[in-house]
Image (cartoon, rainbow, N blue to C red; front, side, top):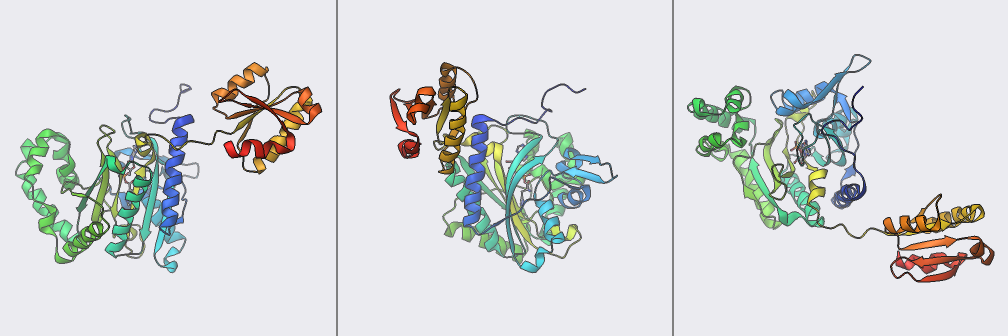
Length: 414
Ligand code: HAM
């Protein structure tokens, strides 16, 4: 029997942290709706093929981080490590292609068997958006603007820097890859062990190696920008012009390659220095070849995902939450009345907490602990008089309020 603890890299989310995460999702949803996106929720597990075919066999995620198992039907299943592949699968199986460009948003848990540390978990949550079916750079621009808007509305955009790169189209990328491999092979002996292994499998990832020695070599490496064909260059120029027109600041980052293999053209990340090692708050880009890798028709796509935990950690203060009132009935008849009154007050949109047992003192302590604004006390006397004793928990003052006047008495304050 496993120890009675959460599994390493997983956490229970309660209280203030739950409120923070909820707030991130609320703001995200509002912005996504404002941008005309529709909601999608895909299953948290898919056939393993969905991820293997799209994320790249050599990506860290597929090579060593997936939660994969054979289920009782003998199917090879993987808990989703990211959203994009599942959404692409849904787009195909739902026949969404008929509807033209799909603009989709969603959020939820993802699973990666990584080494846990601050801001890095084995179950974490993402907010995620995708635009499928639009080859135009305007989609990339608008998606980046949308990401910036989410961070702005959460009050944390200033703590981030937008890093931008292009990986070009497959032709440009292949040309670059070759130049890079030739260069890195010349310095092979001085590369770290990890990077030497990557040289054959996934040389572009060496560009974002954290190893000091690698970085010295990478600093002199050929740059993608010099290997773009005219179409890829024009695409990137349009994206940059669009961001300039929208007044969105960015930093060009030739070493930004992203961890998943499906990217083409635009790649971007919002990075912060406030979170320590796990500074990538949100990242994404274009993935024009992904749908074909899944066995579907050639279909362009672009999107991003933000880590809810990381974003939530960056928030300074949440907007004040509704404090509400707590019902404090004393005795069985009062309890019954309290149930009815609480239901009616809630129906008017008020937040009413109730308690089920304990002395007046204990209940008042609980109401205070839960930061209620009022305690609505109902004992035998109150029942007989048809009034509740409403205690203002900030001032300590008490007022007798007729049952049917409760909503108008406390409503404006909570
Ligand atoms: P990603 O860069 O792998 O991209 O993940 C996006 C964000 O998820 C990261 O920037 C980070 O904030 C968060 N994240 C990733 N792994 C962890 C973890 N182990 N613990 C906590 N947070 C984490 C994608 O997933 C792509 N599907 C994004 C995309 C959508 N590209 C196109 N469309």
